[in-house]
Length: 294
Image (cartoon, rainbow, N blue to C red; front, side):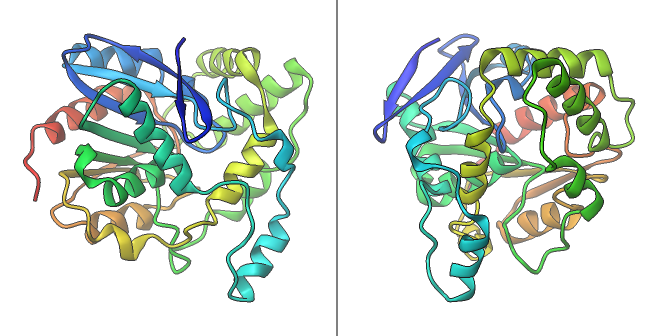
């Protein structure tokens, strides 16, 4: 796969489909590699007229790692905010948004349809207000503004999902399959499919240290709700009714803050991409890509 040299880092990316089709940049969530955008979804999107660009965010997968930065002290980051200071972290979500735009530059794409999931949705929102001329349409899936007034994640899920993970291959895969089933929603979780995904992820490049630094990046800029009201790109917000991380109120807030945004609540969907819903999600992206800017 090719790498784009952007912002003094190398970002691994992959393209799927015909280059003359509509460019669609897919941005993955916290700690997720480009594999998080399944081949099934990417192939359906490509057949629907998109030129797919998926990539590894910095500090994950095969993109540049920030090993020399060490593991962030999340307690100190929180304390800095309490003191009214800007925490000292290795990089920010704005840096990650600029990385994504740098991939478009590397591919000579002036304007693209942008879609992000979870943390990737926050990065997509930042691109839309930081680089508005590069955004043809915007789709934000299972994400949030980071507004501290929103209902918090379900604590029982956070405790289980962010507990220490075994480093040994089979133990890691087994544990992550178990955790993925907890956030899948009310759809039947396909354990074989989940195991295949986690196996490919581990074998491609398992790098837990990057997750901690990406988590720290989510502390900056904090609450982006005031900024997203400036977004004028056609915006689609997709959110699961059963999302335990970013509760449904988070999706509703994004949609109500961006002028003209469409909100699609997916019944039974958790913090996941159930196979049963992929056709609906693809169709929604296609429809949003045909809308005019506000």
